[in-house]
Amino acid sequence: MQPSRSLRVTIAAFGALLCAAPAVYAQTVRAVMQSDLKIVDPIWTTAYITRNHGFMIYDTLFSEDASGNVKPQMVDKYDVSADKLVYTMTLRDGLLWHDGQPVTADDCAMSIKRWAARDPVGQKLLPFVKSIDAVDARTLRITLKEATGMVLPSLARATGPAFIMPRRVAETSPNEQISEFVGSGPFVFKKDEWKPGNKAVYVKFAQYKPRAEPPSGLSGGKVVKIDRVEWLTIADQQTAVSALLAGEVDLIEQPSHDLLPMLKKDANMQFGDWSSLGNQYVFRFNSLTKPFDNVKIRQAMWHALNQEDFLKAVIGDPQYYKVCKSMFLCGTPLSSTKGMSNLLESDFRKARELLKEGGYDGTPVVLLQSTDRIVYANLAPVAKSLLEKAGMKVDMQSMDWQTVVGRRAKKEPAAQGGWNISLTSTNNALNPVESSYLDAACEKTTFGWPCDAEIEKLRSQYFRETDPAKQKALAEAVQLRAVEYPVYIPLGQWYQPMVARKSIGGLLTAPAPAFWNMTKTGR
Image (cartoon, rainbow, N blue to C red; front, side, top):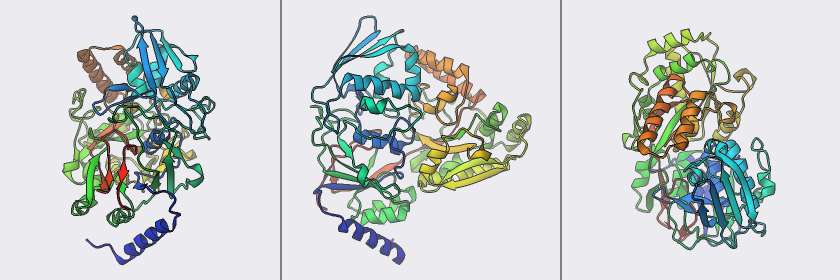
């Protein structure tokens, strides 16, 4: 398949722009990421592009290896008291911030507090915590009121990381975005070269002290073997793929599924997977405002929607998707279809009945559509079609993904610049605590703000429980309650390969893109 003349002109201009840049860095990896980077506070948003940015410049106390085991990261050694109430952690020697100042336990304590105020797992952890204290410059102590085995897994989780920041930055309210981007991670964020809509730039932090052990998942030695990473914003997938084939970019995080056959024909391409468990599409309603403040109208969505229409329209190739009627990712221990009988089958008659019971008055609902993320773009048109068949009026408003992320944070009614429905994806639907969209802690939770004491009670019980069989029963109870009191609708499971040129080596399998350990040969 040959690109059109206009596309070849675009690629040529893009290549000329890259060649015109000063050749200061011998090893530069150019990557087309899933979306533009506009929000750079990883505590403030659940957007994965911001989480990925966090892993570039920040570090974590603990992290998960390729098998999901919790391993120390910034921590050198730790001790848990016999009664399981006191966790004492000693930081590794030689940890520095990008401004050259030493990382202290006081920085860590404040960072954990800010993270826990906003993250759904952190919010569940906080009621167990009596205090988080810096014993001395390198010693952190977490004292609990009640024992739980979730302290280290909470700090290590890949989907909502407790990134460590300088105290002065971590003192920023969790409801406000930070304005300073100093981390202690393997890369330094070049704020002066950051151009939203164009590129974000990171350079090797020469004073970073990696762990001695080999990298595994997001744990182990984060040894940086390249000088510079450029995240390029190329919204048009055909242009991005053509740039990859031409050698003008090195990697595409999420290439369009319909272009994968073209890439597979090129012997210079290699394929990887940064999310081997898959991803779950999410239909999220704003539970604070009409009409989805009414539980009957939310229940109607279980009957109006079906998963296959969404998966076919967005992914297309069954090799990369599957219907999964579970709140927890299929293929994982807690996956279950309990309570899902007769749901997600586009029973429009039943949906209309529930809309009537809920008093739906015909006011259009505002549905946010992301136009620049190919794995999201077709979700909204399918939702609009199905909801209209069920009797709702839908105002689909189109915008780029980062605008969606900013818009969905607004709690105002749709008529005042808010929203009713937002469509997204998650790969953290593993258990009732970690799954951010099952959090029903009212206005403390993420966008959508569902509020249900029963779900929160069950999630707290799961947090305390250590018996796998009892955890499974509690997860099923959460799922049954989420059918009765909907917090979101799962729209099926999908898989996303990453594609890179074979000149890129050292690629790691991890839940988030890892640019450490990466090498580059040739241009």
